[in-house]
Image: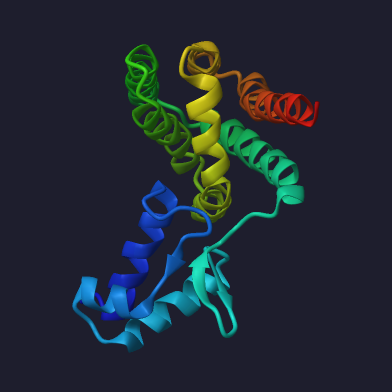
Length: 215
């Protein structure tokens, strides 16, 4: 049976990962206790666990908020995500099945349709599902947990990226297609390289945006 602490923890963690709770958003234990119909004790226990895992910041005499990624850590975090997913993809290729390829194609088609429909939220959701699927098939639960933490910290940047840069651009969809093709062919190193290139492209886009803003 799931404890109240675990129930609150799982709900909050999911809300942060999906962007329902955004970077820097305040979290009040009294409000959460009312929402989940529990006492404040399991809420505080859940928040302590989330703080230990890096999902929330507990600021003395101020309160708790969804973790904020300092600007100077953005590029290193994106690079780390790229390396993590590169390794994960190379691992999953060795056991990839026809069902995996079919699932990835379906998710990528959802992504393409969201771009065509100019729906940044659905596009971001489909893109996240695509990456989550790859991570989930690499054989390491720790990789999935670390990916969730990194993605939660990159959430506000990802939202900005999809809103401002991606809505008329099918480049990422085409990269996904090439990646799926490499997975189907069993080319682990190529698939890993393609995955890392996706994240490097995001860094390039971010740095270009910063240069323009500085002018």
